[in-house]
Length: 232
Image 1: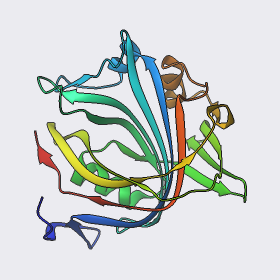
Image 2 (image 1 turned 180 degrees about the horizontal axis):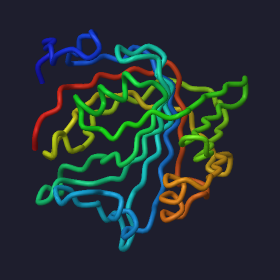
Image 3 (image 1 turned 45 degrees about the horizontal axis):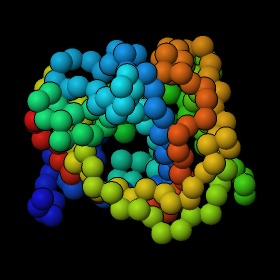
Image 4 (image 1 turned 120 degrees about the vertical axis):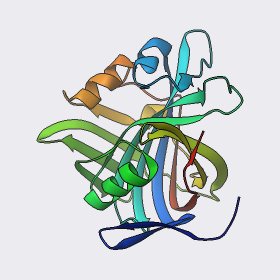
């Protein structure tokens, strides 16, 4: 990939350039094995196929992110995705994000218009103590999701090269990224998930939540590089 900086354009007078470098973020990443049929129901269109990781099972990923220093704002995000691959390319697995609430409108616009990601602006707060981190999401006036994890010690981050898939202007698109994942291991039984009665919460119930994840990690002072979207 090129390391040159390219100007996509501007939104609200702010230049959008790629690669886009996030200098600091904190993130909890939860991984679940979920039933494949309700997972398939969450992926729109016909360009992507949910990966069957075991008979009748799919992989669901929940990332809860506090973007501390980011060209698109110091915002909070809940990233709900499923492991998919483009139809006919089983070797090219990546995440399809079917919901992505954020708490700032600029990044919502940039995510929608530049990347094709389903960002919506909602009330999303992150609360820290010395021992825990809690993400609280409301859709409108209704409680949707609360996730609390222990604030475990974090060592060296884990560099990861991956891809996120989306539909940009109706066209199947891939979004390459280099991201650091946290290395602070969390015991699955120490993850607390509470669901409300909103559409997001009901979708999570179809996947079998709330329950402990298969695995969970926490990381602080992580960074990442997001590359320009490209059609598949």
